[in-house]
Length: 492
Figure 1 (tube, rainbow, N blue to C red):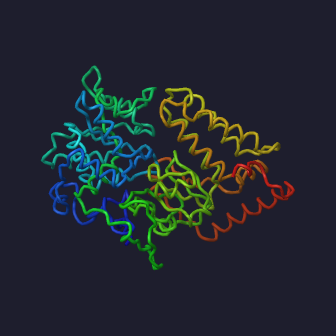
Figure 2: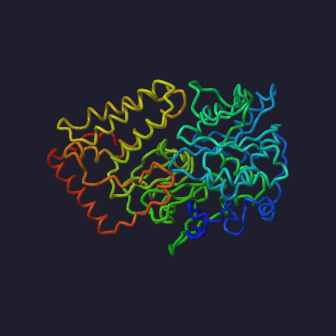
Figure 3: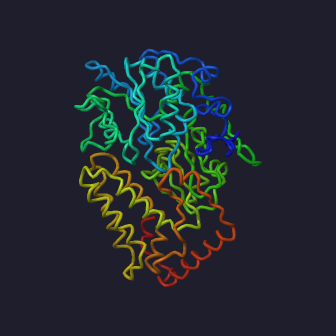
């Protein structure tokens, strides 16, 4: 079943819903699940597991991190245990969602915080960690988690750490730097920037200790897996039902369980959805009322652009997306409507990514601004054609990859490369005419509030008019090019 909470409720600032039966979001709307007693009333107490038992469960489930990189949680734990022979480790819950297109961790912590706290406690008990640090940028989530912790019998083991919001705040090195106690005896939570070198938190994290640092949803999935809420149904038994009157579809899955998505852009009902892992992208589009789209961005602003033609083929799982060079990333899915100038949207976001860097290394200080400038130049008419400029942008994107102090340049470069490949026709139109006759509609929002509250109430007539206008330009430009294609078409 699909359910979306009524927008008259207090939690309407962050709409949530689900396809099939929810696991992480179970019980939302029926009780105040910030209260520990209410949480316990509908879930069994979190069980203590030995290291071997926890690792066996994680290995069997194949649980990977849900923060972007998709690193197996069991591998992280083994690394911490190896290093933890010297110092007692910390568990760090990373809920610093700097990604404007993602709100899934914020939703968990605002509405079902004990799912995350239970999962973190299960891991802490198994690895022998005494302290659990919960790093959060969203103010309402901070309040909810603080109240949730205060209601727990194990409250003394948790520390809620507000972090100044910025895109790179959730990068592991940045978070370690912000949470480490300085010479003044306080955590430097206002300076969540990468330190200029890559060091694994499992080797040397907060206060020099080994850290099990993972995303908030990942810890929530641990709680589901171990049994603090009902275990996910086997993939062979699970089916999803379309959110409207269409016939049921069965999700092709590579593993059991669910994942959280934040779905925004050209949709009627943006918000956070819990879906079966491997759900068809077309079913998600139907659930949120996606409008006619020219492309879709998977994984957020460090993610991958894909053409709308793939919408009917894709399933949202790591395995399902790997074949097209994409990954679930931060769980953000953004539909780019046919009425917007997608190249302008790409340019605006790349400029924002360049400005959000910590400028701790050459790729961030010089490479990303140069890439942003190059993409912006593709919006202007160029009689010589866009090929040279496009190739220069792609070359710069290749140059910054793998050379930064963190993964920010890599993610931004991936976003640019895939965007230019999908938008080759738009690049050609702008080269020929300086326009595609569409305006930037802001489908790729630069703030979470804009992404989740924006209204896309364009009439079908307006959408058709925009599409016809762009089609006329395409035909004219193709005629001028002698039918041989344009600009960066070779990079599709």
